[in-house]
Length: 73
Image (cartoon, rainbow, N blue to C red; front, side):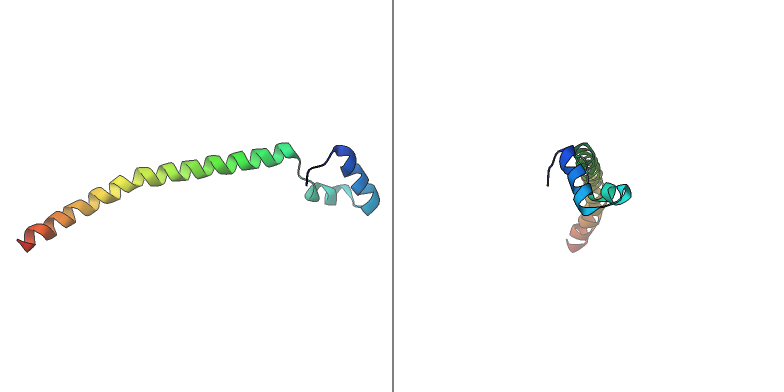
């Protein structure tokens, strides 16, 4: 739900919630955007690490495959 600051004040008035409770229930757009951007950054970093590790794993597996092929001859 997206609302104006006035709507937050009205919710507080009608529901008689304390400031501490309201802070846990209302997430400001800037905070949400920052959280999404941080999650996307972490996901991109993880994907980059995984992609960088893939050639190393393939290189380790290649000598074993070559040895198997030579022993079969």
